[in-house]
Image (cartoon, rainbow, N blue to C red; front, side):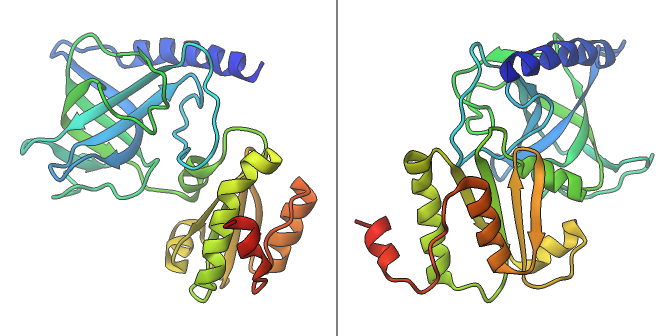
Length: 263
């Protein structure tokens, strides 16, 4: 049922996109989507527009189990820059950048390209977020970026499926040995408990910049509905996860977890 709803949203979205982004008299087309990641040192990057799994929302899926719908389709492009490509800030008519302006996934971008027969929708067997091979290539005449927001940060990391969780640790003093145990634990619990977890460590400054948080340390838990818990108390994270999933976290300093996880 969920995949059917996503497919319906995809059909409507694709129709709207085609009407809004049709070619002009100069065969210039506007592509609106999300910056994903840079592909090489020449500045080529991947643009996500939409697919039949997450709709128009680009999601990080790398370490979480996923089940794509039948006949998975996607609109995504490799964007080629040139010496003539110009960069603009949203709402500005003047050039706003002299160099590549992207650094964070899911930033909103609007790209003017000279191309015909767009949009291009393709069927794939793997998520486009994990595989950029054989995507159509478009050359950018201009790129307009929107400011990166906390909503962009949360959206790209929000899991798609039930029983999927993302845990961010923004704590400079977090025990690195314990972090390794937690990440190994996260890699195993899917098979054992049908619960999927990705544990990611970031410097606190990264969190503060985009989440408007100055409490240290900070821990952030996301489930498929978005932000589930934000706290500076690690015990709250442990308690929340156990109550939500009936799965207990490893205990810091408990050497027995080595035998359990690395046997």
